Length: 142
Length: 147
Image 1: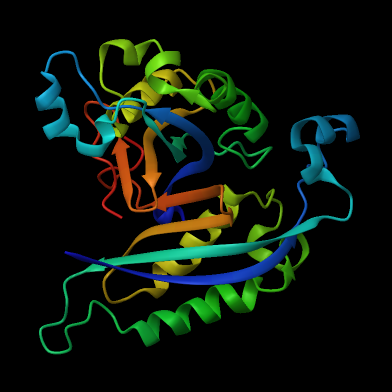
Image 2: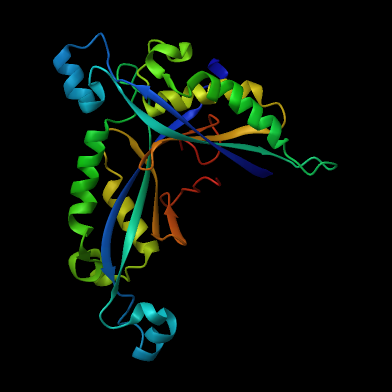
């Protein structure tokens, strides 16, 4: 098995706020991330696909194809958007790094037909990220 | 979508600067010099370490979080950074009086200090000693991830 990773970057804004919590609770739990008008990040996304290289092309999947999937599923949905208001897949969820990474996994997983989606890592900043692995995969969620 | 529900981990990076010297009284001076090379120089040297920790757990539906970062940051600060940052690992961290403060041993010591975080399960510790060296420990039964 060979792993292939492609990295993309996008910029988006978000706000952490749960309407079921009081204003004080929101403030206490989410801190600065609860500021009323939101804030933004430069996100970095690393997507890893696992598979056997095709004997003729030598590729697990064509990077062009992966690039197009990432453009369509992630960039067009999230780049220069407000994650709370403009991404229907996140409706009703706090757009934390964990939830955004999960939505990205769920968007990409069915679209990757050659090889299998193996790992999604979403950096919200260089020091904060979320990792998604296939449920039950070795090394994940032991 | 249910069957494509992934396992999710929260990853966080911290930085600390510390000095160390690789030297063991179990070896002669010559052997220490041969095994550890420059790292055996008598007065030690330092690194800017980057500590990367991964925690797994259920993403809370109300907060969207595996663990609140304020809790995690305070825990890592208390368990590791307070005692390690701007310190000599050999002199200031009791564990390294008996064992050599290689980054392998540092990974295991930090894993031990972080494994009781009450809000999520520690999956692995990765430490970059320099931009070119990194070490990873996922517990005795851990295999880590290949990516």
